[in-house]
Image (tube, rainbow, N blue to C red):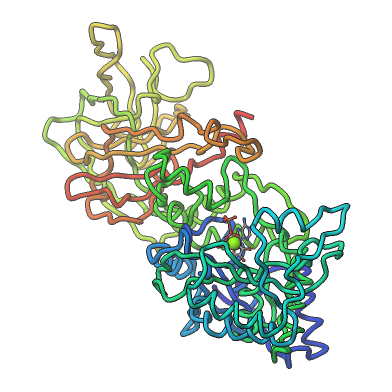
Length: 557
Ligand code: ATP
Ligand code: MG
């Protein structure tokens, strides 16, 4: 993150809270945040919002931000996910230095905290079943009922808890609960479960533990242990804040972190829930976590989105206290805005139509020096070969054009980008009557500018040389879902957009792309921005369309 980016970040209610704490020296002037993903899936654009917020605040205030794997629930967690998270946060442009932590490293510490709670009479072992606990909990309108085990002696609780750890009991036989208040209007405070028995291998601690701490207990104590000052989380944890504070107060920890909630990011035409993204991957609705249609960081990276564009998007949406749906075209706009500056221009033809320049000598080749960026000479230029046989885009030729069609049609002239004006003389059709070849003449006097006789040529189209261009596959992506809020109903998969991927295999691209490597990004003039996919191999380039030049959906709507 650049100094410029930091200073351009507008203030928000979280930064105001931090400013206030700095004034009152609540944390001795320190600012320490953390990004705490659970390694049970890949990060998505919603996580990027949290990453940018936490690391951005640390950078802005000269503080620190830790990366912490919140890995206290063995089911679904894995090393693959840990590695993907590390890669993605780094790729987004953030650095945690030597502060990569694992909540699972705190298991012993957390256990000791639990023992401390038991010893102060603030936690007890409850032997009700999960269903009974739910029943006893009460509802929003009715108070809960105390567990018959609530008044077990400290000795009995210590004994049972030790034996829970030792593996003497079946899964679910007992839980450890905080002793708070079964009549609290906040259901979270009605003696929440803090430890459960679960025999499941943990990807880091193996079978060492058969009891695991619950999120509410582990999270606040992990924060406090790392001396986090501001623990920023999403709104659904608002009701858990009193519990967060209760644990830290009861355990008299040295650093009482401040939990602050903000609205999670929702983006139209996609879903941001790991559970649902996993479903897309396992059901094969997409080709893996890094499928370029996925809202994951890995997917967006493969598609060709830049970290700058994603950070800029996160800065633009800001942080607020109420949930909202952000239009996906804002994200696409940020990608376009960045690539417009940074992507070199080139030419590619997606659906080729053969063009013969009848008056251009066979065997002759001219090389044209073409700028890589019309507004930025520093990006240099490349030599583009021109010869007698070319390809243009099928849609740039129409036999009977409508009004205001300024591209090629019989008897009409058009400029071939960077080179000559050509005129369509006649066409060759196949048996079905489809035009398969267009014959033109070129005007040598138009090499470096408009026709000297003053006649107007309105259209400019892109092209490639038939002899010099390279074959390529191009994957055109559209929105993954066909409706704005696919997550609203039960079955989100029925809203998948059947046309979210179109693969074109007969494309031709400029010779200059011969050495293009995965993740290189280009503007194919008039078509959009494209990146080299990792499926490319020598002799077979594969491109992803990152985004079109303009928002084609705005028109559809
Ligand atoms: P999901 O609902 O996708 O499973 P999660 O909240 O369970 O997400 P975590 O791995 O626990 O995923 O998230 C790590 C951090 O990222 C948390 O601090 C969480 O608040 C934040 N986060 C997750 N999703 C979003 C989102 N859509 N917008 C903003 N922040 C998010
Ligand atoms: Mg979570």
